[in-house]
Image (cartoon, rainbow, N blue to C red; front, side, top):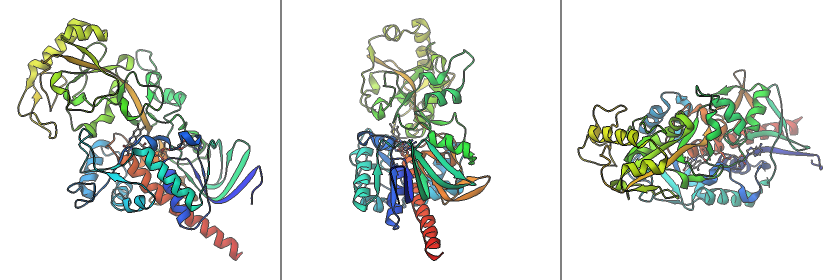
Length: 475
Ligand SMILES: Cc1cc2nc3c(=O)[nH]c(=O)nc-3n(C[C@H](O)[C@H](O)[C@H](O)COP(=O)(O)OP(=O)(O)OC[C@H]3O[C@@H](n4cnc5c(N)ncnc54)[C@H](O)[C@@H]3O)c2cc1C
């Protein structure tokens, strides 16, 4: 039943990225009517998911595009390490196990995979790459959803939610009230909301507002409207608003949608200094895929929220070159001048680092034995002296990918109110990723969480709707 100001469906899905589409497809396949509301216009659809390239998958033996094996325990240990234990083991293991089963379903909906290319983040064993990237993935899902009869509305940002005693009643888009028997929220984090980021990060000891200097790597549409609405409705939350996937990106990146080409992947091949030409963290702590997401936060903690990734000629060809060329100079003094750094301090920092390098057998594909001694902070792997001109520098700033503050869920992706799971309100993707990712990140796990919990949320929402339909029919 619908008129201009109201609409009623079985399952309402709010959001238009990977998690929402997985939920919508599953709910539709389960036989319910589904309406998907995407805030963006059709040409900007797909949220952050349209920027992605791969998902991390457990597998016990080589599988089509995935080499060797990546067993559950190893995946779990990787997650445990990057989150520092700030994860829910039951939900994390659920995501890990389900990641081994979802790709045949994805293929049925038109997603194609390809092996990782050389120059990607050493991921051929752990991550399945989408042919054509995330944009092709979301386009395939939209095509499939349309073919299956999912109703899709663009330019439809939900601005209000009606939830009574933990039960979803309706969502509002402008003046229209949309009722549904069950609802899946998959509207991303609040990373695009600069005011909220400012509030979450606060002011530092120097009086700066670090978040003012962040770029948002993905969509501008993830404003956290539903998260705020859920705070108002009394839902249970998990996570710290200042925790996020935050990468050190090219400081010249645009405010929104810079995507992966603004990433700077040479940090582990050289050193990183702040605006006072001082190093501040071990650049060789671990493989870059496991560490790249902590560098945004590290740069955010530096004065002015800037850093400079410095390499020499030996590193060229060993990493994916960023889209903007780096500053290039034949001497360290000249490079400092190009960056506006104090030349004496810069030369001293590089000199100290070079003197501390204990070069063994350089191997960027292993945690090699090239390290520093008597330098603070230490560089524990891949430490080669910066001694071969030309020297290059890339300016860095924090690039926020997605926030981790989210809704607490159980294994059915149900939103909780005072510890009790809702009967008809579910959540997936970035809006609940904090259950698995309390902090840190390992490449590809965002799409794993979105795909697994999107599918669960869609299935559960359909079941909830069918149950209500059956009750109505019998009443
Ligand atoms: C540059 C970049 C590269 C990345 N690469 C990878 C990768 O290779 N692998 C990986 O695993 N992860 C990657 N990620 C992270 C990944 O994008 C996310 O983890 C994942 O896409 C989250 O999916 P989602 O559906 O929850 O959110 P999104 O894909 O962001 O979708 C949220 C949707 O909700 C809509 N929306 C927001 N508010 C409302 C509202 N009020 N009403 C209606 N709709 C609304 C948005 O328009 C959007 O369509 C990357 C992210 C970025 C930015």
